[in-house]
Length: 322
Image 1 (cartoon, rainbow, N blue to C red):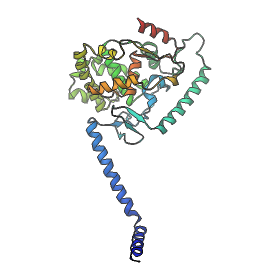
Image 2: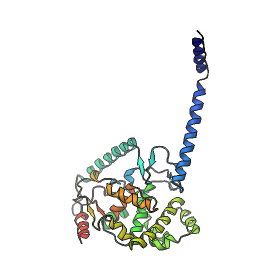
Image 3: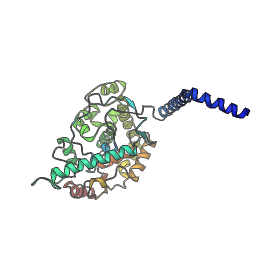
Image 4: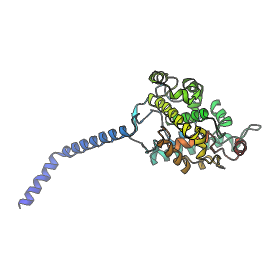
């Protein structure tokens, strides 16, 4: 009888104060989030932040970026505002992993874009024009098309040009290729034409000046990452003779040829990009997750991912064989 009465009292007490347990849960949740935030700050001292622009895996690859390169983001979209705690997480290698639900939505949107492109082109290019990869449309920006036609997939062996492509690929965490390429000349001017020795010597005044230039749309933490990578390249060059020798050594000094017929077959990351990413992080590089590294490898011609029916495919293969 005593047990029943005691149980009844507890039961009524719970019914009378339903907010009590909720408050306890809120306090525990806040404590957990605070602990997680302190842990992340220890792992990533420069700050793990994202911009207000939409960030997806598809924006990290030229081959998956079918956006028609108009600068649709707002002027303030480059400023770091929202900590990336929801909708995605960072892997230990600094890469962005979008939730499966978000990825499915992106795939549906990509399918819709591809259908529209196929309707526009009827499966072929205009008579007399060059046949390009399917993500290049008649509405694509000129700088975007030029990068595809002249740079993307061409093997690069110069340290400064490799540094430039690594820096531009790292910017994909905030922008897409079209946005970056429109500002490519401005980036070259800001970072001494990506001379890694000169960039490695940049000081706090340079950081403030570059991050304060709103036309560049680079947050302070991104600028510091680029400068830090320049210092790492300097160290790697001392060990291997050049950054070029180090990077191409991962490829046995020979590009990988994809031979893909459809852009959906082109991967976002590969075991090779994961291995390179892991080693770069071990050496102190920043913004070099497996997806970003694979985009860099594509741009630097370490991987040739032009579709087989693109006019650039045989040209890039010939350059690689040479």
